[in-house]
Length: 245
Image (cartoon, rainbow, N blue to C red; front, side, top):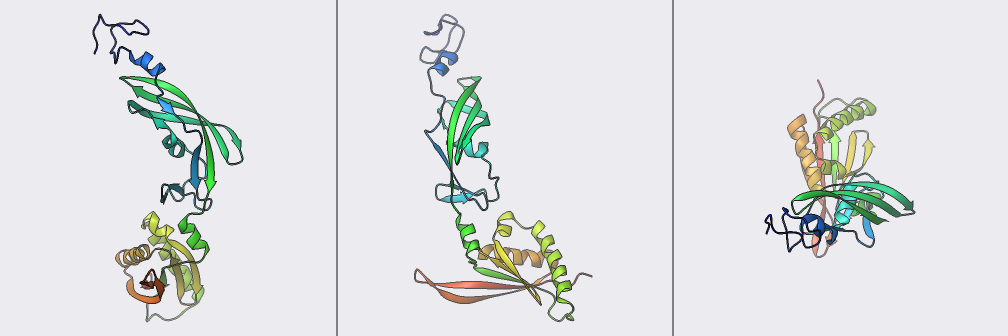
């Protein structure tokens, strides 16, 4: 409620919106608008920079430096507070412990104000599943990059150089998660073999090669074992790219 005759029970000012007898300024002084955790923890993959949130890994390829995207979600925000932005400044570092000073621009009960906050964060390095699989040469699919089936054979190095240029062109149009699924490659006299840790991503790349570069695609699967009572297959995509005119 508010009225000209009503006044804040703490500061005595009138003409302000009151909630439970307090103006916004006095309420802000008596409310924990932002509460930092005792110790914030950020779990980061040291290889690719991905962050672990709950049971999920995301932000693959992110900076190894802690940013607002890492720090601000660690804060407890009062339900009546809207956070406009938080500027963070690293004040001290000791091993994997980082100390930050933050200046938050908040909106609380109709008015904006700045709020200072101190935050200590521990970085836990843990290899994400994708990097773990790559380091162990794990793969679920192979993309065999080849030239036309009936083309005259020339120098293997010339063929691979052409195929590599076409592959790089294809990668510029591919989704980031498709590119990240490629673990390693091997050079062969007839072209390149690209090993992928995600069969769906490999299939999507093969289809894109067909759409964008006029490639022919043949798919085959090989039974490699059983896991949890189900057959486990590795899939091979033979992608033949036409010669460049």
